[in-house]
Amino acid sequence: MNRMSKIGCGLALACALAQPASAATPEAVSDTAKKNAVIPAEPVLSEGVVKKVDKAAGKITIQHGEIRNLGMVPMTMMFRVKDQAMLEQVQVEQKIRFHVDIINNAYTVVRIEPER
Image (cartoon, rainbow, N blue to C red; front, side):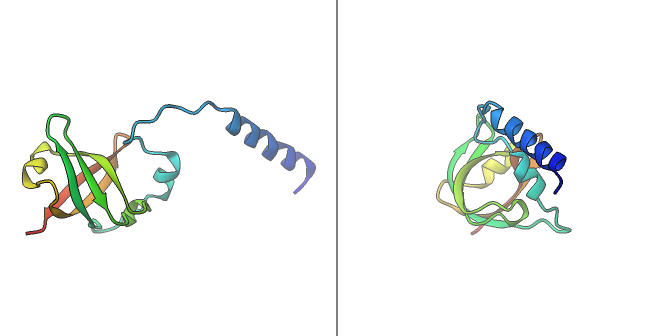
């Protein structure tokens, strides 16, 4: 790497580190997540357990395993739902299979299959 390249890399790093941290909501999608997202030919369903249903806000909290299409590790988090009617299909502590996409910069559940 020549001297100018090293200087350019150093300046880019310094500028990135100098940026103020923005207050992100739990549903905000990072640039890294967008870059790592994989769009499969068929929707990949992840497994989880419903922890909370907020019909008024159109959100669902899911304790989930890996979400492969987004490169997301297991955790519990809140998601928006694409269609509020999905919230009528599930109950707290119910096991589900679901698919999440990034819509309008938010993790959004676009499909839910309750386990019976």
